[in-house]
View 1 (cartoon, rainbow, N blue to C red):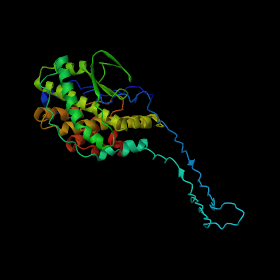
View 2: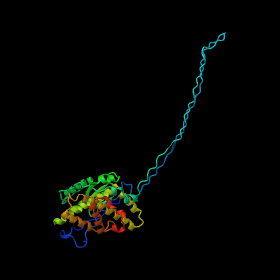
View 3: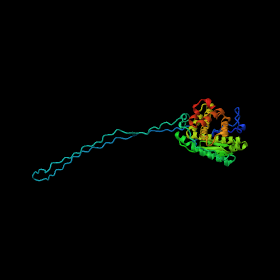
View 4: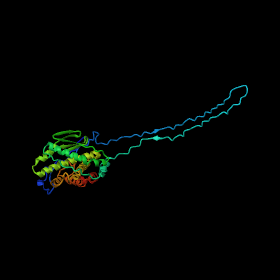
Length: 358
């Protein structure tokens, strides 16, 4: 996959379940969960590994020796005369012992070789984020604004960004990575990014190159205003919540090295089938990460009653058109694991069989 190409994902089903009642069988619903998020461009470096050669320089310091000095000094006090004069004092002989500095063993100074960094396999399969522990609630509450217009949608995005920026830093730090908050850019129509061009006929996405979440205003406002029923509006709000948290999950993958490592692995995949499987592992993990946040704040947001019912419905009813996000059953499996455990340790989609990421 060439660098700079944004990854797009799923779109919403055509409304929530009729009457708010659970369907008896899997419904047709939505476009694949847009999860795919953004391109992994990583600041224009590309998704391919960069090898750095380090040269060790040895220096040799020669031993130094002090030259020894031997200078006898005589001081007779005698004056020449016709008569032999006996010196009044005995000549004094001063002897300076040679002082030789003991040669020191040559000391070699060398630059220690740096320890090899984690491989791409280590970053996706054994990332330290999986051992960071459970996420603590930040008592996030849903915005009082409704996404019926641009200002209402933007208020929801700002509220979610604030909550997520409080929820993830501690876990990211425990993984050994440095936390940086993402930028959020709502858009309608066409939007140009470092990762490529997107438009509002598709889902929201994340661009790793500039660490920006692009939220589709047209989609979120349209979902909320399309149907008059109260339960449908709850579904639209839950859909927006899940989409935003999912795209933030891609940001967490980017910060911890999972995103770029996955792209390099996929780029080197020997078959298209393995490349698509790598994409599904990435996308299903992003949903699991997103639902860690939702589950951690389910009491305060809250995710109860009709909100919980609609959340459960939407994580199952979606369609993976390109076979790169996973089917509804597997998406529900990973989303529910994140929601219930609130711990990244249950989101290691790279450590399971292919059957769990179909």
